[in-house]
Image (cartoon, rainbow, N blue to C red; front, side, top):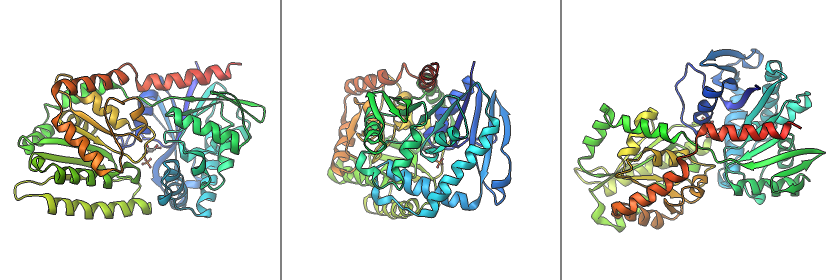
Length: 459
Ligand code: G6P
């Protein structure tokens, strides 16, 4: 059997707790069951990092091979080009894009360093799976160094519409580099279609059919693979969490009020400021709800060196204070906003306790939190999911209350509708959402990608 080699910017080294963010959660599940090697950044910054060999650790049948970044690489490659340029570009948020040429140069050179450090660790029977926007050039670099093993690439973010790509410096080069892989995977059919259009128009790839391109004589398979969670496992975790000290404390503190719950990284794509404004609009438009609801939002600190994240944090601090000061009463704080992350099991319990999951990203590749909220519910008395129609998950969870994440009235009306919803309707909507995710798993997602990658290269 071939050895699976996963390559991603972030690798959760075994000694560290799991950080928030979809990619590592889903890949950890896959590698834990499949075995193999995970290569990438260990999360550490060190002035000598560029000269140190990869550190190899083994845990639970998985080899973790990791390298550090120098402070300059962290600034220019990670904080800079990856998260200040590509991340907002992929999410079609041009107002957040910041571009510096020296950051692009660092992006190329860190990708080269990933390549050089990975090459000696590869075996002839490996199957290589590269993840996400940090590593767009890597497949092409590996090919240039003679790597013949199958290479897959999966993009966890959306793939933007063709016009947006014009804001990408060297956009055409990225497309040509990606086309050196054997299989390219995207979250939704729209992302796949955007990529095919861009690859044919801007990189000159020939479209053979809706899942096959030919570029410089090389056949590339393209497909849609929506990322999944482990729903049964998450459901069990949520149910078990109900009888814990954390959950008793939260439940006691609500004093019978209905709970609206959101959990995200603190990230400009998550629509947090509009989400708070939507909640405030609920309290203004439907004053009978005042004193009878509590909105708990966890927004775990993330990428704190990126300017747009700092600006978001400042805006939110102001907005949170204003909301509680204007709408609060002597014995009622409408909003509880936490920037410290909580353990996954506790979050699962919060989701189960919640009457409403309020998840309204401006745009999101998938949004696994939405799927987790559905999995966490008590089927007899489920909560209602209010979900942005611009999250990839909305394609599958179309029985949720779908909202425009920029329209505060729309969000307020959806919250009101959710609060007023009959048990019968709540069950029907929850059942339809559950049916959409119940028979899929993160493992199945990974295996379906790998099976196709294997098949495309068994020629
Ligand atoms: C998203 C990205 C991942 C990233 C994660 C956490 O899910 O798609 O590639 O790892 O966010 O972000 P961070 O910058 O902390 O790795």
